[in-house]
Length: 140
Image (tube, rainbow, N blue to C red; front, top):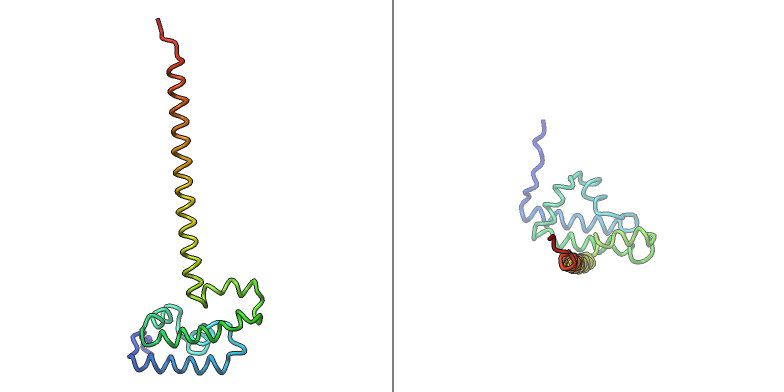
């Protein structure tokens, strides 16, 4: 029975793995559309293992280089634009960060507008209530 694979590879092993990935991605550049074709199909790493790899300082530069190699076809028209647009957040971290910031600013603006509307509505209800109270005839 085989022992389960561990994701705690040495720094040297992570560098060697990164170099192997770059070599493979360059060799398969015309046909590869996602890095999972290497890490899952070729190497049989799970997504959770992969997530741990890309957090390693010694592996990350290789990962980012591989992303840029694969991402070229998302910009050059090889991948149809509707699909390419969807994947830009994956391949271009700066786009993802910018979109996330824009979405956060927009959400804050909408929340502030809702709070402003709620305050305006509360003030209007108070005005109407005050007017009703002023117009009530005292009971004799």
